[in-house]
Length: 184
Image (cartoon, rainbow, N blue to C red):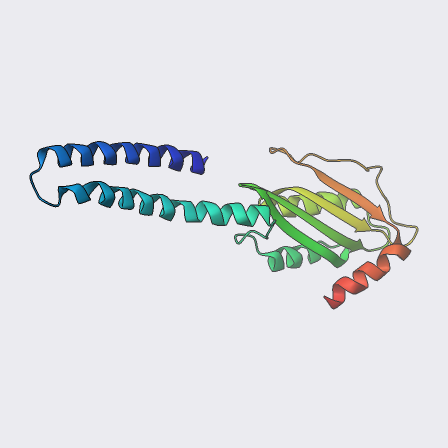
């Protein structure tokens, strides 16, 4: 939306600049009056270039799916580990899908017998506090006491659109993944 506004504004400034320089060149008798049009054109080009740089930075960050500067990944990891049933984190990622839409994913290892619905709700609420309303949480359930709670699809958060998925992982297949994440 900002790019559209800047485009319309640059067209407006270009029109005003052309009209102003044309009027000045017509009615002024100053010998250097013919330099007004190129000077106004350069001024308009500088204004457009200066306003385009922030848009290019934002666009590049979105296309490269980089972590947003306003979200502290270290803080998210610390807060996830404060959820009582989470024992260990695998991969935790946050990236920007579009302007204003953040995506998050986490792999968590929970204590035996944990209710995954409670873990998922706690993770969903935590991500939401950071402005992340679309997330995937993979729950590694160890032992036969872990409960899936019957939930295997999306759970939409209150208030805003978004999806929060979870997957109950096989303990033997994912043990190696958590060990690798600890080394990183």
